[in-house]
Image 1 (spheres, helix red, strand yellow):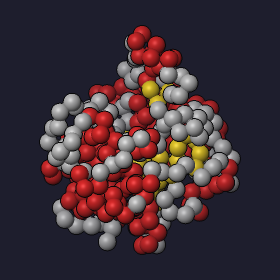
Image 2: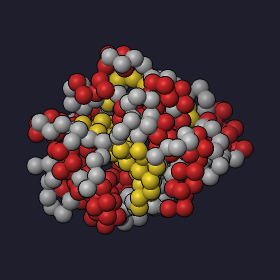
Image 3: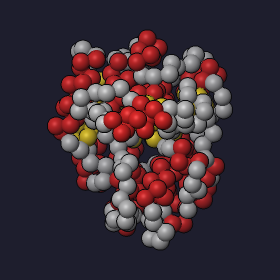
Image 4: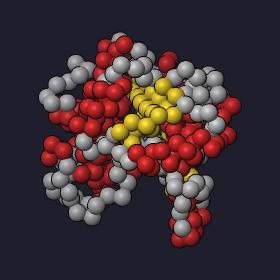
Length: 324
Protein backbone atom coordinates (compact mmCIF):
# COMPACT_ATOMS: atom_id res chain seq x y z
CA UNK A 1 0.00 0.00 0.00
CA UNK A 2 1.04 3.63 -0.44
CA UNK A 3 2.39 5.94 -3.10
CA UNK A 4 2.99 4.77 -6.65
CA UNK A 5 6.49 6.19 -6.26
CA UNK A 6 7.34 2.75 -4.88
CA UNK A 7 7.10 1.42 -8.44
CA UNK A 8 9.96 3.68 -9.50
CA UNK A 9 8.16 5.83 -12.05
CA UNK A 10 6.87 8.78 -10.06
CA UNK A 11 3.27 9.69 -9.30
CA UNK A 12 0.55 10.37 -11.90
CA UNK A 13 -1.29 13.68 -12.05
CA UNK A 14 -4.86 14.07 -10.83
CA UNK A 15 -6.68 13.67 -14.16
CA UNK A 16 -6.38 12.27 -17.67
CA UNK A 17 -5.33 15.54 -19.28
CA UNK A 18 -2.57 16.26 -16.76
CA UNK A 19 -0.81 12.99 -17.57
CA UNK A 20 -0.30 13.39 -21.31
CA UNK A 21 3.43 14.02 -20.87
CA UNK A 22 3.81 11.20 -18.33
CA UNK A 23 2.20 8.58 -20.55
CA UNK A 24 3.44 9.88 -23.92
CA UNK A 25 6.25 7.37 -24.30
CA UNK A 26 4.44 4.43 -22.71
CA UNK A 27 1.60 3.74 -25.15
CA UNK A 28 3.43 3.94 -28.48
CA UNK A 29 3.25 0.73 -30.48
CA UNK A 30 0.66 -0.85 -28.16
CA UNK A 31 -2.87 -1.98 -28.93
CA UNK A 32 -5.46 -1.40 -26.22
CA UNK A 33 -8.99 -2.79 -26.22
CA UNK A 34 -11.47 -0.91 -24.02
CA UNK A 35 -14.93 -2.38 -23.59
CA UNK A 36 -17.75 0.12 -23.13
CA UNK A 37 -15.52 2.94 -24.38
CA UNK A 38 -18.28 5.19 -25.70
CA UNK A 39 -19.07 6.90 -22.36
CA UNK A 40 -18.03 7.41 -18.74
CA UNK A 41 -14.83 5.85 -17.45
CA UNK A 42 -14.45 3.83 -20.62
CA UNK A 43 -14.37 6.95 -22.79
CA UNK A 44 -11.80 8.72 -20.62
CA UNK A 45 -9.69 5.56 -20.41
CA UNK A 46 -9.74 5.31 -24.21
CA UNK A 47 -8.87 9.01 -24.44
CA UNK A 48 -5.93 8.63 -22.06
CA UNK A 49 -4.60 5.61 -23.92
CA UNK A 50 -4.98 7.41 -27.26
CA UNK A 51 -3.10 10.41 -25.86
CA UNK A 52 -0.35 7.98 -24.85
CA UNK A 53 0.00 6.90 -28.49
CA UNK A 54 -1.71 3.51 -28.28
CA UNK A 55 -3.95 2.13 -31.00
CA UNK A 56 -7.30 1.96 -29.20
CA UNK A 57 -10.10 -0.46 -30.07
CA UNK A 58 -13.43 0.85 -28.77
CA UNK A 59 -15.35 -2.38 -28.12
CA UNK A 60 -18.95 -1.24 -27.74
CA UNK A 61 -22.48 -2.47 -28.26
CA UNK A 62 -23.69 0.63 -30.14
CA UNK A 63 -21.62 1.52 -33.22
CA UNK A 64 -23.10 5.00 -33.64
CA UNK A 65 -22.23 5.96 -30.07
CA UNK A 66 -18.74 4.48 -30.43
CA UNK A 67 -18.16 6.51 -33.59
CA UNK A 68 -19.33 9.62 -31.75
CA UNK A 69 -16.80 8.87 -29.00
CA UNK A 70 -14.08 8.41 -31.63
CA UNK A 71 -14.93 11.82 -33.12
CA UNK A 72 -14.57 13.43 -29.70
CA UNK A 73 -11.21 11.72 -29.13
CA UNK A 74 -9.98 12.91 -32.55
CA UNK A 75 -10.93 16.49 -31.60
CA UNK A 76 -8.65 16.19 -28.57
CA UNK A 77 -5.99 13.92 -30.07
CA UNK A 78 -5.72 14.68 -33.79
CA UNK A 79 -4.48 11.66 -35.68
CA UNK A 80 -5.27 9.22 -32.85
CA UNK A 81 -5.32 5.59 -34.00
CA UNK A 82 -8.84 4.35 -33.22
CA UNK A 83 -11.05 1.47 -34.30
CA UNK A 84 -14.53 0.20 -33.49
CA UNK A 85 -15.37 -3.44 -32.77
CA UNK A 86 -18.72 -4.86 -31.70
CA UNK A 87 -19.08 -6.10 -28.13
CA UNK A 88 -22.16 -6.68 -26.01
CA UNK A 89 -21.06 -7.52 -22.46
CA UNK A 90 -24.27 -9.48 -21.85
CA UNK A 91 -23.61 -11.99 -24.63
CA UNK A 92 -21.13 -14.85 -24.75
CA UNK A 93 -21.68 -15.03 -28.51
CA UNK A 94 -20.60 -11.39 -28.78
CA UNK A 95 -17.56 -12.14 -26.60
CA UNK A 96 -16.62 -14.98 -28.95
CA UNK A 97 -17.04 -12.70 -31.95
CA UNK A 98 -14.77 -10.00 -30.51
CA UNK A 99 -12.18 -12.60 -29.52
CA UNK A 100 -12.23 -14.01 -33.05
CA UNK A 101 -11.42 -10.54 -34.42
CA UNK A 102 -8.61 -10.05 -31.91
CA UNK A 103 -7.05 -13.50 -32.07
CA UNK A 104 -4.86 -12.76 -35.08
CA UNK A 105 -3.57 -9.51 -33.55
CA UNK A 106 -1.18 -8.56 -30.81
CA UNK A 107 -3.17 -7.21 -27.86
CA UNK A 108 -1.18 -5.42 -25.18
CA UNK A 109 -3.97 -4.04 -22.98
CA UNK A 110 -7.51 -5.27 -22.35
CA UNK A 111 -9.72 -3.05 -20.19
CA UNK A 112 -12.83 -4.85 -18.87
CA UNK A 113 -14.93 -1.74 -18.31
CA UNK A 114 -18.33 -2.28 -19.94
CA UNK A 115 -21.12 -2.84 -17.48
CA UNK A 116 -24.42 -1.87 -15.98
CA UNK A 117 -24.43 1.06 -13.56
CA UNK A 118 -28.17 1.82 -13.40
CA UNK A 119 -29.30 -1.53 -12.05
CA UNK A 120 -32.92 -2.75 -12.29
CA UNK A 121 -35.20 -2.51 -9.26
CA UNK A 122 -36.24 -6.16 -9.66
CA UNK A 123 -34.16 -9.22 -10.44
CA UNK A 124 -33.91 -9.88 -14.17
CA UNK A 125 -32.54 -13.22 -15.44
CA UNK A 126 -29.22 -13.22 -17.30
CA UNK A 127 -26.69 -15.74 -18.58
CA UNK A 128 -26.29 -19.16 -16.90
CA UNK A 129 -28.93 -18.35 -14.28
CA UNK A 130 -27.15 -15.25 -12.94
CA UNK A 131 -29.13 -12.06 -12.61
CA UNK A 132 -28.70 -9.41 -15.31
CA UNK A 133 -26.17 -7.21 -13.50
CA UNK A 134 -23.74 -10.06 -12.80
CA UNK A 135 -24.34 -11.34 -16.31
CA UNK A 136 -23.47 -8.00 -17.91
CA UNK A 137 -20.66 -6.89 -15.62
CA UNK A 138 -18.86 -10.22 -15.24
CA UNK A 139 -20.03 -13.19 -17.33
CA UNK A 140 -19.49 -11.64 -20.76
CA UNK A 141 -16.02 -10.45 -19.81
CA UNK A 142 -15.23 -13.85 -18.31
CA UNK A 143 -15.95 -15.45 -21.69
CA UNK A 144 -13.90 -12.84 -23.54
CA UNK A 145 -10.93 -13.39 -21.22
CA UNK A 146 -11.26 -17.14 -21.61
CA UNK A 147 -11.41 -16.91 -25.40
CA UNK A 148 -8.20 -14.87 -25.35
CA UNK A 149 -6.35 -17.07 -22.83
CA UNK A 150 -3.69 -18.09 -25.35
CA UNK A 151 -2.76 -14.42 -25.77
CA UNK A 152 -1.91 -14.25 -22.06
CA UNK A 153 0.62 -17.03 -22.64
CA UNK A 154 2.10 -15.73 -25.89
CA UNK A 155 2.68 -12.07 -25.05
CA UNK A 156 2.78 -9.76 -22.00
CA UNK A 157 -0.87 -8.73 -22.15
CA UNK A 158 -2.13 -6.53 -19.32
CA UNK A 159 -5.75 -7.09 -18.26
CA UNK A 160 -7.39 -4.27 -16.27
CA UNK A 161 -10.62 -5.08 -14.44
CA UNK A 162 -12.74 -2.37 -12.84
CA UNK A 163 -13.70 -3.01 -9.27
CA UNK A 164 -15.49 -0.52 -7.06
CA UNK A 165 -15.31 1.15 -3.67
CA UNK A 166 -18.72 -0.46 -3.08
CA UNK A 167 -16.82 -3.71 -2.41
CA UNK A 168 -15.52 -2.06 0.77
CA UNK A 169 -19.01 -1.00 1.84
CA UNK A 170 -21.10 -4.12 1.29
CA UNK A 171 -19.72 -7.62 1.84
CA UNK A 172 -20.41 -9.95 -1.06
CA UNK A 173 -22.16 -13.27 -0.36
CA UNK A 174 -19.97 -15.88 -2.05
CA UNK A 175 -22.73 -18.51 -1.79
CA UNK A 176 -25.38 -16.31 -3.37
CA UNK A 177 -23.72 -14.83 -6.47
CA UNK A 178 -26.86 -15.49 -8.53
CA UNK A 179 -28.90 -13.46 -6.01
CA UNK A 180 -31.72 -15.97 -6.16
CA UNK A 181 -32.79 -14.49 -2.83
CA UNK A 182 -32.17 -11.12 -1.21
CA UNK A 183 -31.95 -9.15 -4.47
CA UNK A 184 -31.74 -5.37 -4.40
CA UNK A 185 -30.17 -3.04 -6.99
CA UNK A 186 -27.23 -1.88 -4.88
CA UNK A 187 -26.38 -5.41 -3.74
CA UNK A 188 -26.49 -6.60 -7.35
CA UNK A 189 -24.03 -3.89 -8.41
CA UNK A 190 -21.68 -4.36 -5.44
CA UNK A 191 -21.61 -8.17 -5.82
CA UNK A 192 -20.90 -7.94 -9.53
CA UNK A 193 -17.99 -5.61 -8.87
CA UNK A 194 -16.69 -7.82 -6.06
CA UNK A 195 -16.83 -10.81 -8.41
CA UNK A 196 -15.00 -8.99 -11.21
CA UNK A 197 -12.40 -7.71 -8.77
CA UNK A 198 -11.90 -11.19 -7.30
CA UNK A 199 -11.53 -12.62 -10.81
CA UNK A 200 -8.86 -10.05 -11.65
CA UNK A 201 -6.89 -10.59 -8.46
CA UNK A 202 -7.17 -14.37 -8.60
CA UNK A 203 -6.14 -14.48 -12.25
CA UNK A 204 -3.01 -12.45 -11.50
CA UNK A 205 -1.94 -15.14 -9.02
CA UNK A 206 -2.78 -17.87 -11.56
CA UNK A 207 -0.65 -16.19 -14.23
CA UNK A 208 2.30 -16.07 -11.84
CA UNK A 209 1.86 -19.78 -11.02
CA UNK A 210 1.83 -20.59 -14.73
CA UNK A 211 4.92 -18.41 -15.33
CA UNK A 212 3.04 -16.66 -18.14
CA UNK A 213 4.23 -13.11 -18.98
CA UNK A 214 0.89 -11.32 -18.58
CA UNK A 215 -0.63 -9.48 -15.62
CA UNK A 216 -4.19 -8.97 -14.38
CA UNK A 217 -4.61 -5.72 -12.46
CA UNK A 218 -7.71 -4.74 -10.48
CA UNK A 219 -8.45 -1.05 -10.00
CA UNK A 220 -11.24 1.01 -8.56
CA UNK A 221 -11.98 4.55 -9.74
CA UNK A 222 -13.34 5.96 -6.50
CA UNK A 223 -16.66 7.79 -6.48
CA UNK A 224 -16.58 9.24 -9.98
CA UNK A 225 -19.71 11.12 -11.04
CA UNK A 226 -20.84 12.76 -14.26
CA UNK A 227 -21.72 16.01 -12.48
CA UNK A 228 -18.02 16.68 -11.82
CA UNK A 229 -16.88 15.53 -15.25
CA UNK A 230 -16.15 17.91 -18.16
CA UNK A 231 -19.07 18.32 -20.54
CA UNK A 232 -18.50 16.58 -23.86
CA UNK A 233 -21.21 16.50 -26.52
CA UNK A 234 -22.74 13.05 -26.82
CA UNK A 235 -20.48 11.65 -24.10
CA UNK A 236 -21.16 13.53 -20.87
CA UNK A 237 -23.98 16.05 -20.83
CA UNK A 238 -25.34 16.22 -17.27
CA UNK A 239 -28.24 18.56 -16.64
CA UNK A 240 -28.46 21.23 -13.97
CA UNK A 241 -29.60 18.77 -11.28
CA UNK A 242 -26.62 16.46 -11.84
CA UNK A 243 -24.21 19.37 -11.91
CA UNK A 244 -25.64 20.68 -8.64
CA UNK A 245 -25.48 17.20 -7.07
CA UNK A 246 -21.89 16.93 -8.21
CA UNK A 247 -20.94 20.21 -6.59
CA UNK A 248 -22.65 19.20 -3.35
CA UNK A 249 -20.63 15.96 -3.33
CA UNK A 250 -17.33 17.53 -4.38
CA UNK A 251 -15.81 17.01 -0.93
CA UNK A 252 -15.88 13.23 -1.41
CA UNK A 253 -16.44 12.74 -5.15
CA UNK A 254 -14.51 13.36 -8.36
CA UNK A 255 -15.01 13.37 -12.11
CA UNK A 256 -14.73 10.39 -14.41
CA UNK A 257 -11.72 12.04 -16.10
CA UNK A 258 -10.03 11.68 -12.71
CA UNK A 259 -11.24 8.15 -11.91
CA UNK A 260 -9.96 6.90 -15.27
CA UNK A 261 -6.36 7.71 -14.25
CA UNK A 262 -6.33 4.43 -12.28
CA UNK A 263 -7.17 2.50 -15.45
CA UNK A 264 -4.59 4.11 -17.71
CA UNK A 265 -1.86 4.07 -15.07
CA UNK A 266 -2.47 0.36 -14.44
CA UNK A 267 -2.31 -0.24 -18.18
CA UNK A 268 0.95 1.63 -18.75
CA UNK A 269 3.08 1.87 -15.59
CA UNK A 270 6.25 -0.18 -16.30
CA UNK A 271 6.85 -0.82 -12.58
CA UNK A 272 3.90 -3.22 -12.40
CA UNK A 273 5.99 -5.87 -14.12
CA UNK A 274 7.99 -6.26 -10.89
CA UNK A 275 5.02 -6.15 -8.46
CA UNK A 276 3.89 -9.15 -6.44
CA UNK A 277 0.62 -10.72 -7.63
CA UNK A 278 -2.60 -9.01 -6.62
CA UNK A 279 -1.51 -5.38 -7.03
CA UNK A 280 -4.48 -3.03 -6.75
CA UNK A 281 -4.91 0.66 -7.61
CA UNK A 282 -7.36 3.10 -6.05
CA UNK A 283 -7.67 6.76 -5.03
CA UNK A 284 -5.60 7.89 -2.06
CA UNK A 285 -8.69 8.86 -0.06
CA UNK A 286 -10.80 5.87 -1.19
CA UNK A 287 -13.53 7.92 -2.87
CA UNK A 288 -11.23 10.49 -4.51
CA UNK A 289 -7.64 11.66 -4.74
CA UNK A 290 -4.40 10.75 -6.47
CA UNK A 291 -4.08 7.12 -7.52
CA UNK A 292 -2.13 4.97 -5.08
CA UNK A 293 -1.37 1.35 -4.25
CA UNK A 294 -4.47 0.37 -2.30
CA UNK A 295 -5.79 -2.55 -0.26
CA UNK A 296 -8.73 -4.37 -1.90
CA UNK A 297 -11.74 -5.55 0.09
CA UNK A 298 -10.64 -8.62 2.05
CA UNK A 299 -13.30 -10.89 0.61
CA UNK A 300 -12.16 -10.17 -2.97
CA UNK A 301 -8.69 -11.55 -2.24
CA UNK A 302 -9.97 -14.48 -0.19
CA UNK A 303 -10.49 -18.11 -1.20
CA UNK A 304 -14.25 -18.27 -0.52
CA UNK A 305 -15.22 -15.70 -3.14
CA UNK A 306 -12.44 -16.47 -5.60
CA UNK A 307 -13.41 -20.16 -5.69
CA UNK A 308 -17.01 -19.27 -6.54
CA UNK A 309 -15.95 -16.72 -9.12
CA UNK A 310 -13.70 -19.25 -10.84
CA UNK A 311 -16.72 -21.58 -11.00
CA UNK A 312 -18.54 -18.75 -12.78
CA UNK A 313 -15.52 -18.31 -15.04
CA UNK A 314 -15.58 -21.99 -15.98
CA UNK A 315 -19.36 -21.86 -16.57
CA UNK A 316 -18.91 -18.88 -18.87
CA UNK A 317 -16.34 -20.90 -20.83
CA UNK A 318 -18.55 -23.97 -21.36
CA UNK A 319 -17.11 -26.01 -18.52
CA UNK A 320 -13.45 -25.51 -19.38
CA UNK A 321 -10.77 -23.60 -17.48
CA UNK A 322 -8.71 -21.86 -20.18
CA UNK A 323 -5.96 -21.13 -17.65
CA UNK A 324 -5.66 -24.67 -16.27
